[in-house]
Length: 52
Image (cartoon, rainbow, N blue to C red; front, side):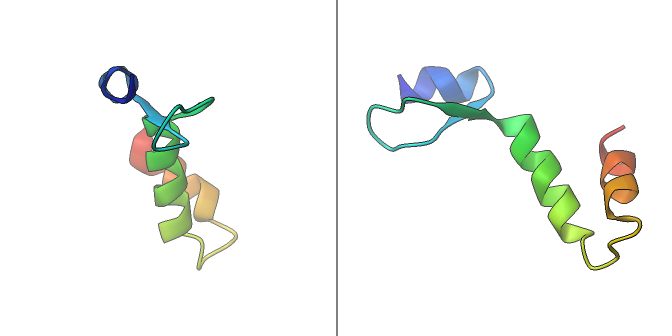
């Protein structure tokens, strides 16, 4: 089940018997937002610029 989730772009929330999964794209976006969070005014704009 875990491999099927990852292949389809989802990250399981538990190592065994996950009840929920998070989009890998969303995790990458969160990472980009976190990397730019030192400049709070432009953090979201910079992260969006990275992805779009």
